[in-house]
Amino acid sequence: MTTAFEIPNPDWRPEGWDAPGHGIDDGAAPAGWLPADDLAVIRAQLPIVYINAVPVRLDDSGDVTQVGLLLRMGGRGLTRSLVAGRVLYHERVRDAVKRLVEHDIGPMSLPIIPPSPQPFTVAEYLPTPGITPFFDHRQHAVALCYVIPITGDCRPRDDALQIDWITPEGALTPEILRSFTDGQDVLLKQAIAYLGRLS
Image (cartoon, rainbow, N blue to C red; front, side, top):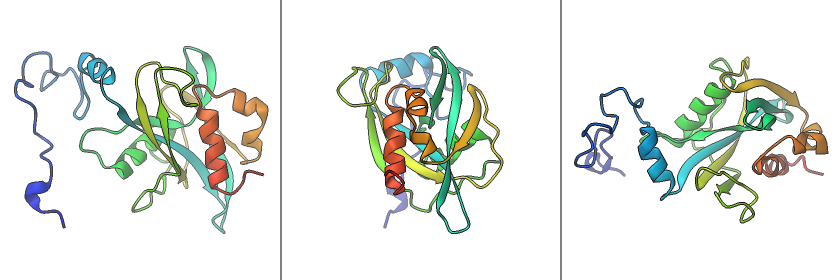
């Protein structure tokens, strides 16, 4: 059992952290986030914990009927993607999954997060292409990957233009898989295999 003195203090900062330019009470970064300069230094030296989530719709029997694929506008034009983002300092994984799903597909999406989330895989994004199927030019990111049932109304936000609900088999067509970048097509195939729908 964890005792009170073992729980990390969320307000702890290294010595000198309150110096100008570190984002503490100066409006430079929201709570839990690092200023851009600090994040760039950390990305160059440490792996960053990420979440990837595959939204799904279930029928009354609990079988997956549809997979939600985001359409985004980015530097490479229109691409497909999964829900993704960083875990914040002092944020539980289940809270990060909920926050990121709601950020990408809307606060009324009503994701079902299990009490003890277990990833279906761990994806390691590296800034050097070809070592793993996953690539991120900015950093070494270790992504915990989840299948998340969605029960509510989805309204994508920010750079997510829309979410398309496709059957698991339809999501595996070459045209759909080619529309992903940085190895997320591999993650989609792994998720569908995890669901027992890869023939």
